Image (cartoon, one colour):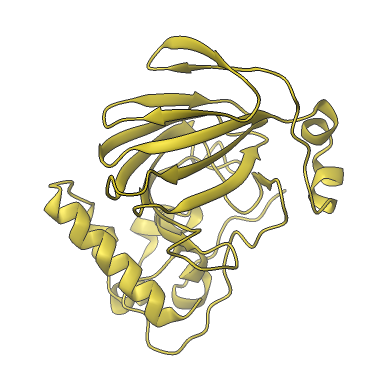
Length: 247
């Protein structure tokens, strides 16, 4: 992705959230100089990968993509330092935009439509072999969908749908997504952008996403202009800090 496109996407999302009267925390607006001058009192922003995250999954962002802002998060690799067991994110979905099929090995989440348009979410169970062997699954270019019914909950009510079934989340509704459950979504075309929130267990987007087809989750950046805002993947380059290393 080009840096100029990333700047535009973040500005678009900030403006949309202001219009919807959803305040973001101060670090959502930090400038490049703010990040360069970050000190130890805000090291959690870097080590827990808080802030902006954008992906086009190697394609056309407006068709297939996602804008994320992480408000709070724990850390898989430093539970003593960061004992927080939960994560909260904004997943901003443009009208008609698709998120590709994927599941998480560790993360358990509720996906919540906070306002705007409708969200269509499609679900498949993963195979036991796909879900059980992390290293083997990562080496494969394609996952496995099971032809079995999917059982989950919408706002506390248990539902069962066929494999590949679709659920529409209207504003105010939420759905539970368990580890190993393949899910893909699309902002229902013509209903408007979706202000989607995610409440989950601790999350690490570098290691806990298993896509049905191989996909570039963290995009490579063409630096055609100076960053207006940073994404979490930029922090090691522009701050004095880095992500905590795995043991």
